[in-house]
Image (cartoon, rainbow, N blue to C red; front, side, top):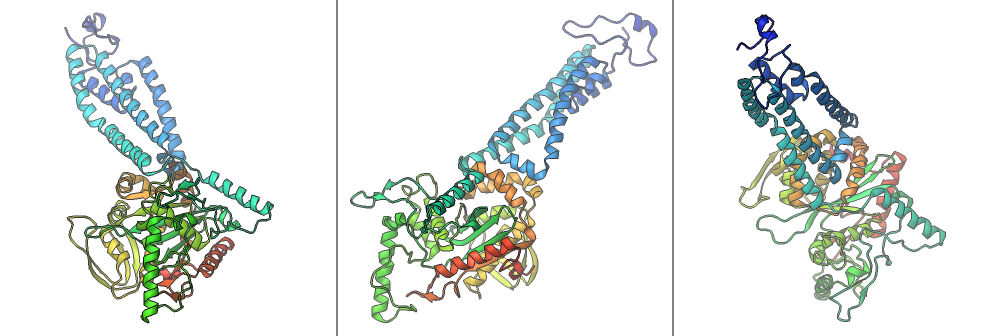
Length: 551
């Protein structure tokens, strides 16, 4: 039997087509594909389902596949139309990530069905077997992207479900804040309004011998809510000093990022780790670990004053004020990290306690926190592709590594612009050699300012897997997963060219020192300075801009 392979085939063969093999579907005798055309049809079906059917003359079947292709193209066009920010907002929602997993599986199956359908429709037995064999090769090559998408999507889903809490919404938080302020004004109250992310139902303190009930956090000393807070999202960014050979974790880096969703203005406020005198809530005042630490420091201060070797600029009061933290602010986290009964809905009670004290000291509502240690910092910077900074100093520094088993960190840098990887960046922000903590905190807030200014949404999307992996391994936060789309929109609308910076550090905002020579924060001056900067941002003329960063 002679198979018709083209227009020059024997006309007699066209009038007497061969009987198709059992189980095969016959192709119209008007067109019987060659082996190579059949193989091409299989490949086309994997690339564009329906195209292979059209190539072998199966038009009705082709149109059916093309109809499904049209739905896929419309969906793809919609995804392109929402832009990079819109795509990123979808990627941080678990239900959409699950939709991606399902859609990816269905699309891969759809392509396989299209290719196998073409292979089985081809009439000649030899060509059919060749086509089926070729399909296996095509599947290995073309289904790899589906496996890649599947593994990345499942990894992302794990990050969203493991790292971020499930509840919360920025819009709802703003509405609650407005209602609280309106209620206070309607009642003519001049006292504080319940504030802070740590407001909880009363709980029993196991450290108190009589099992006293812990009061709610709406106690005296909580910051008043004002108009400047009603449209702001404020996040405490903390960097822990945990690393090889370093016991515990202190929050040596503390930066408050406050963003106005109405104007797109932002401010970065660094808090020196050396400061002391931060306010404590009444709940923290009754905590056993906190009380023990406070009494130990108070006794040492009394002994120093009695012995005449105190460095304090003022004499101690007659009694210790339990509402004031006497140690460095970077030590509050380790002494409250086990106080889960105070913050039953927070996986990191130490960070909730730190956020509460920072809120009270600065006079603004800290909505959320993010905590990252040395290893996490290195991996996040590397995941972003590095960060370009403006150095004002010459550094030739060697430091201990961020991860166990690695070599020491080394940095050689001169004044000017430099792009740093994660390891170099860690040395850059930690270095205090021949400088002070004031210089270091300036360098840290300028570094964060550079990250915010340089990182684009497209970078986050293209490197999302590495970024998500670093967050999953090393970051801790109380930002609810449902807030992430709103937060992404807020950051996207941020005016990156005009990010104000300020510092809470020794000087006018901490003019006195304690017996150890540690600067004591001046709460009224600090709150006034923070409000001045924020009000300046709202009027378009920030009190302090980013010129200190050299760009």
